[in-house]
Image 1 (spheres, rainbow, N blue to C red):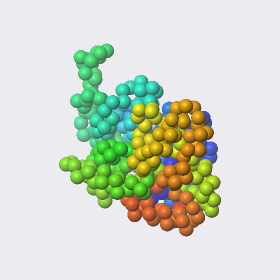
Image 2: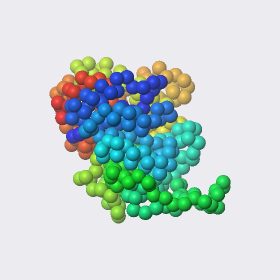
Image 3: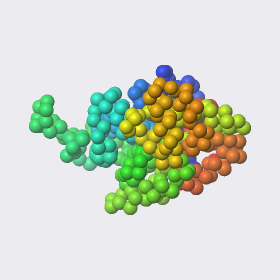
Length: 345
């Protein structure tokens, strides 16, 4: 089992004491540190800024949103950071959701699977630098079609001026549903599981197996990373830890997506919490957030947590590893927990 520090995205301001957290993670032997983005801070700037003070730990985005930048731009970010870090970058990508894509980026959300496949291929073509980059589209045509609205017809195929340090920078994809996870196993080097649950481990493995079985699949299960974001609390007071994380569960289930399409909510339905998900969503839509929090049962919060005494946490980590998780992306904001956790793996 590998450990990673998941810093995520910022709230109203920068993450408190992030450099100390990253230093503790590197000193303790953590494999990677990850940043993310929603509709505030971006994923790459903090990663580059904080990563400049590191020497060994890998630097990943979990996730950079596809709609935030064209695939060639993402590839430029990636090859630049990979050079600056001496080959320590992990590209983590995700489609986000329709509210963000259409409301924040002003782009259509449709065809997320096809968009992801095309995006990843273009990024790989840029990094390979074997030829000028071309794409037939339809989502990211390169060059831009001469007969398209606003086109000058002067676009030309290019390849990066800068020679990438690595042509095979690993690409990990955030995915939640069966089709997305299967495609991730087919075209990517790792899966970023935002809400991993032991109760669904067999389902996850069947989705992954479908992707690995496809012709031309990039990896096998043996050399594919499964990185699960998890809240880890080493404590004797499990109830307090669950209460502290309850708002996050409620927010993602009830407030991070539209009523008609919320991928996080669908995942919790698969865990068996359909009625609870409906109640939480209805309360959020009605503006009754405190009641929505109260509607989240303890066991629902604990689905995606590792919590208990040091011995109990050690045993739970073994269970996650046996289920197929190769990396725990911990969201703790305490250097002491980071150091203690490293002794339990």
